[in-house]
Length: 339
Image (cartoon, rainbow, N blue to C red):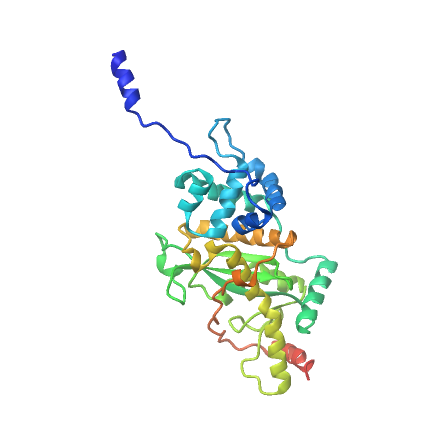
């Protein structure tokens, strides 16, 4: 009996563990940013903030450290759908890399609270000044638009996620400041949802209408309202053309923000494949990437022009409703400042 037990033990496949690289010491500063999108000191800061959620619950020798989880999470988000490359680089299996990614995304969304709409009088004044310097339109506190993020076909309600471009996606509405910082995000809608519908059901609309902090610049996919300033459909007079150019110049920051975000985190762009996760997890990944984008701004990390991608912001179908006379008069007053 003892002999049989020894024979069975020999037949068992020995567990093997890859050499794990969790240290940044072997990389130059440029290589660290290129690989993980954050600087060395920013990564250490991030790991310190996420450690309570990412620290292994066990003292086993081969448990994945919190720093390794941060590096794996950053690498997957920046590289896209290439888990095999990530597991080879960090010495963990593809299955472990997938689990680590979701732990990392959860920890970022739980602990990094840097997507905030301006609330105080000072914050609002700074926001309005920033946009006025950019486009010479007063009382603007942000620019808003939606963006599509490719995902794998969901098991349920798959047709609802087919966007106007014919692929499965989530439609995320984001608002940014004049310096391309995300200040509000709505990430929960399928790709077929129209931008104006996302806005109509958002807490952002409720806040803008009840608190009246200012106005948002939006494209023609949104309705003209007391809180949304949209372009003129058919400008005729020179002042109208100048208004449209200024409105576009101010609104461009949200498109640029999407281009930088998707260039920095290729998992959100078609060049990184599609997000192979449920819509709920895909939305969480977008939120984490947006928080990390803002963190990059905090640390002064820029992206080379060659790395910024086309976010695919082709025009949404124009809103077909008729704005009220009050809203038309409001926009007319803005147009008249360009006479």
